[in-house]
Length: 431
Ligand SMILES: Nc1ncnc2c1ncn2[C@@H]1O[C@H](COP(=O)(O)OP(=O)(O)OP(=O)(O)O)[C@@H](O)[C@H]1O
Image (cartoon, rainbow, N blue to C red):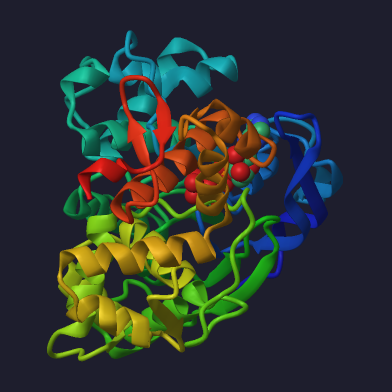
């Protein structure tokens, strides 16, 4: 591998303002480089700043501190040699496939005939021959993302940045597209020299990357780096691949204060993981039963759970927060309380859950306390949203409150009226 550096970040930091105007650090002290010949995957929890980092690299966003450079020159805006593929495809619906693909070439001032030749060749390479005249809505999700990738690659970028490019697609379509891109890369049919991919999918990262970087959250910092020296193409079933998936699982789910001892209450502005109660109960039941009997290797559990990593990680985190299970060295195990939950019938399950929620999730405790202080036992959700917006964007605050409401209703800690948007103490009369 050549040591020519394509992208480099030195001491990069970025904050966004929260609703009350206070800066909220999202990235801190990031040193990173992407060399020629490398594919690097960036993993991290939702909100750890992966997209922000990619946008800084692409010149779409300025860092507050530190520098971003491309081939030694500071990045101060979009750079012609760097192309990006988005999860949402980001196609113009009123333009044909070919017109979408040619956008970047047009911006470069390329004459129509040359554009036509280039886009035609790229459409063919991406398996889209014959679809140039179609509109995006006439295509399947997988085909649309092929257009997104063709649009990025048609400019012959030196560096390709992919932000969860496959996660909106069904598993098989995503894997096929990923393999196609790796084929193009391995066979040098594209001139791209380096790729940086953001993913939620550990297997995808292990299958593609020469290096995996794991970001910690709030603020995002580089927490781990794993080098992978396996030849591509790799087989998902190869023992080395499985071992790496295991290792990365372990690193991703490691919490600083973990173990059988339940964690302290998380801050009221903590981004509660988006896990629903049925996923949590499902994972507990799976873990408690045979063959796991209380402890499982994470990838094995993932196989059995039939849920994608995006759903499982928040669930592991939620179970950890609530002291029902913990993750350790690539395994997940039930705590004694988690065992009790697994053995209990519904009412006791809800009681255990509610108690843990009040003890370990400060937001739930706060809601309950404020409701108890109200003569009517009811409050609008607004003050709680305002509280959360001190720590996160409005749409995230809404999601976090939704999680707290779902968990609180299950644990019978408080009620929520979807019509009035009022939080209430549980109806005592029904007991
Ligand atoms: N323009 C913005 N204004 C305010 N806050 C922002 C902005 N863009 C991102 N953030 C916040 O920065 C944090 C990191 O966001 P980012 O999208 O980079 O995370 P991510 O790791 O890519 O998350 P995900 O995996 O969910 O896509 C989040 O808390 C997000 O709300």
